[in-house]
Image 1 (tube, helix red, strand yellow):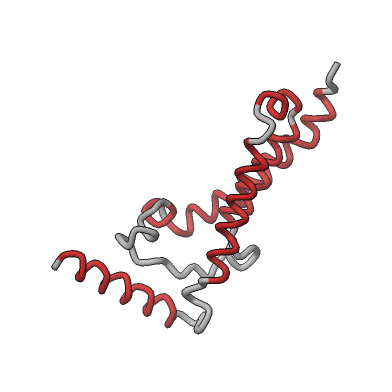
Image 2: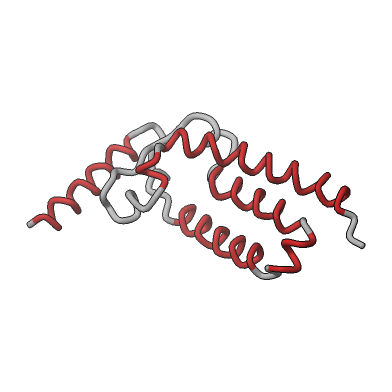
Length: 130
């Protein structure tokens, strides 16, 4: 029989820590900029210099991965969907690396990068409208 008590002693903290890290990132960026608004060029990417971005470069991705690992630690979940969490974590990690490599703020973390990115997004919007 599975030891559910030991499993939840690890999975519950992972779930809590993951969501505790992810939620402030969502709050700092806002609802429109956490979805595909930035990726599709509809919204200017925000430059967030406060917590949790001072603690972890990609708190929403890292927090989601930690939370998913909490689900994966549960034997019933892992047995029913053995590849779901590993596949998501690989895709999240790949996306995180892609964002880090193509960091639109890498040249100036003093705020100019945010203005430059907003101008680029505005130019794309005007070009699409014409």
